Image (tube, rainbow, N blue to C red; front, side, top):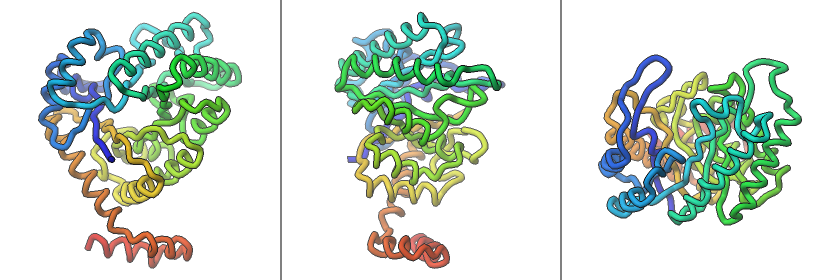
Length: 318
């Protein structure tokens, strides 16, 4: 059954490199805002930010009847691990990151959640000859193998992204991340497919989903949209309408019926209204995908005639 979540940090402070749109909110305020998002089933909680008081956190989850889609492990920290965490050349820093990831896994287990997702944004490089790639892969393999062995019942989901804050992130696309997971060969290490990150990396998100699902590595999905140039974290369908329709058509066929979490930057807009719109738009995009007759689409895909295919697709909405 499909369920919708919002990453908790997007209910708090919203700022970019130039300005602050909204000041931070307390955990209680974030949950209060979440309670006004229509159709919301849960939150993706951020570690360590949301876990300062676990008793309060559990109480709020119960009070608002919200589930936990995942625990988002933040491996980029102000004043810490500035040259990467899991790929840092410093053994001490890597050990710190792994120990903290294990704590996040324990926190997820205590909440009855079997998923920790992490986007290793600060792993990577800005310049050529800055990073020893071979050693970095070895460091990352060792780190994630240690964490995965800590609790095999908790899935570790690696979210790839092409760039930001590094000019080139270490896990930049679906193929690189899938290859890393395959080499690691552990059942509980897979991939978070962020739709916007796939688009920015020049992928067809539906194809990325198919690739990851065939390998048994499609563990989790983030929804947002962008202009293929920058990761703007916008409402689904703002730019890539048909990519979303194709994506939902494929994830349904692939049997992914799990959490979809929104990674959307609301800027100055009302967060509850914006995420309510995100869920409603998602339902509409999914409904359009649901109108596609599979037998007819199978024939169209066999023929590979875009003239007929696009006419058929537009007949579903006009």
